[in-house]
Image (tube, rainbow, N blue to C red):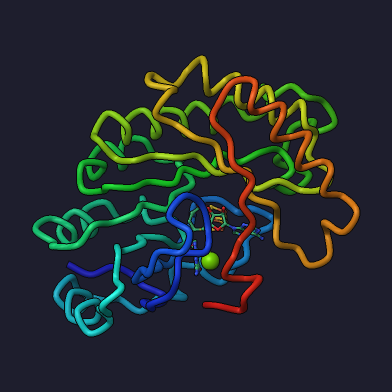
Length: 244
Ligand SMILES: C[S@@+](CC[C@H](N)C(=O)[O-])C[C@H]1O[C@@H](n2cnc3c(N)ncnc32)[C@H](O)[C@@H]1O
Ligand SMILES: Nc1nc2[nH]cc(C(=O)O)c2c(=O)[nH]1
Ligand code: SF4
Ligand SMILES: [Mg+2]
């Protein structure tokens, strides 16, 4: 079996609750969303990857193991587009794995959630999409994205129920309303089956220079989310350090 893989590399996890861990990243090519902030836009096109077999991927990963290796990061693009390949690759794999997903494909998640010890589910917001597809982000109401958030919450519930240490990640802009993040946290608190097992990571968008003078907004967002959930504000460490 083969799947389009854009890159396999060893680095330090730069995001979320495994930040600082040495990981081997497997970046699948192809994505079903088009976030306007995506820092790996080339990964959205499945043709940006080389078709690799499970056996070839095992060999490549084996050659990248280091003494400080902690886990695999299965990312993309959107890895949930390739559940059969991931199932074959991780089934019987000796390595712990993190799933880095946009959470939009619950049925695919259901098939492979049991193979992950860790999971990061991105919660996409109106600002993440272009004008023609997003709702009215001038309001604090999250109704515009009900469908995608419904699916992301389903994926969170599936991953937690299968034992993955799961957190959600929200990429925020200097323009993101603090009460929007508060309402998002409230919705997650209400609809996630085991909310005590879920933390929210507020991740500042890494568009250069966007945060100078806007950081008080991060405190406001954290405070609003903290009314409902365990919350962290964590920037992308690898980009600040120039790590891959
Ligand atoms: C490239 S995506 C691939 C995995 C999956 N498609 C997703 O969206 O989670 C990996 C992560 O990068 C983060 N990311 C991408 N572009 C970013 C940016 N400009 N600023 C901050 N985080 C970003 C998102 O949080 C996303 O979870
Ligand atoms: N160092 C490093 N950490 C990361 N965390 C999430 C990443 C991703 O693109 O999925 C990423 C990445 O591309 N590099
Ligand atoms: S879902 Fe992930 S890979 Fe796809 S466009 Fe958004 S950030 Fe990029
Ligand atoms: Mg990245």
